[in-house]
Length: 105
Image (tube, rainbow, N blue to C red):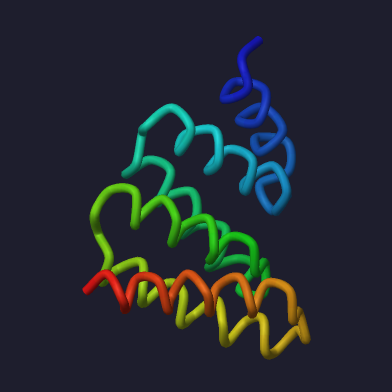
C-alpha cells in the first residue's frame, strides 16, 4: 500500500488525525501535486489552527510553486500560531523564510 492510500485509510477511520493529515499533505507535495497538497494543508489548519508546522510546509509548497504572495500570507498566519503556542523554533524558521521571500521581491 502506498503512503497516500495508507494515510487516507487512517483519515477515513479518524478524520481529525492531525498527524495523518499533515503526512498526506506532505506526500502530495513531494509528488508535485501542489493543489491537492494545499487543500490538505488547508483542511489541517482549519481543524487544527495551531499545528504550526503545517503553515511552514504549506508556505514552502507555495514558494516552490512560485506563489510567493500566498506563501507570505501563510507565513504570517504561521508566525501568529507560533507566537500563540510559544514555539520559538518554528517562529524563527518562518521569520527567516519570510525575510528571504521579502528580499527576493
